[in-house]
Length: 243
View 1 (cartoon, rainbow, N blue to C red):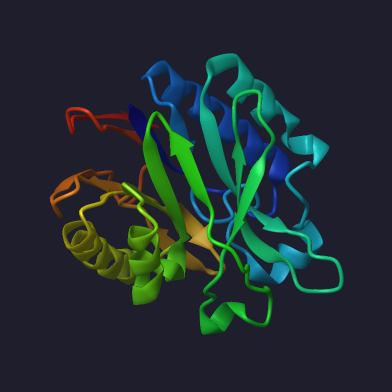
View 2 (view 1 turned 120 degrees about the vertical axis):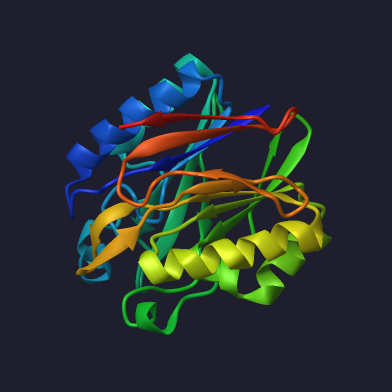
C-alpha cells in the first residue's frame, strides 16, 4: 500500500482557495497510486488560531463535499486539517478523513500546546484508520512531542504513525529527531506532513518526511516548496511531486 503526505502553503483564512489546492494535490497523489493522503495541521484554513472560532465547521460542512466526491471517484482516503466547531466551547483542531463511500471521521487533537489553549479545546479520543491490513495511529503537531501519545498508539497495535503539523524551521528540525526515535523505538513507519509559508505570523519549515519502521529517514521535501511525498509500505520506495 502507498501512503502520501502533502506539503502546502495555505492561504490565510481562504477556505475556497485552499480547498481547490487540496483537490489538485489529492488527485496527484491518487495518480501515483496512493490509498491515503494527509495534509498539514489546519490545512483548509491555514494555521491561524485567532481566526479558528470564526472559521470552524464540522466534518459534514457542504463546502467539503468535493473532497468526498474525489475520494469516492479515485478510491483514496483524504485527511485534511480544519477547526471543528464545538457547541458551547472553543473549537478543536481537527483532522477530517474522507473515505471512499464511507462516513467521514474526525480526529481532534488531544494534547494542546500552551499557546493553543486560549483558542482551542482538546479532543478526548484517539482515532485509528484501518487500510489494507495496516493500523494507522494519528497525531497532530505538538502531540508528537508528548511521549505517552506515541507510546499509547504503539500499545494499541499501530503499524504506522501519521503526523499532521504546522511547525516552524526550528520546530520541524526537532520533530525530525523526535520522529526518528519514535520510529526506531516502536517499530512503526512514520509519515509527517508539514506546511510552508506564513502561518500565525511565523514561517513554517516544510521538510515533510517519511521513515521506515526501523528509524531510517527515507526522504524529505524541501523547506520552501509545495509537493507530495509517497511511501510504498511494501518496498520502502518513495516518490515525489514538486509544486
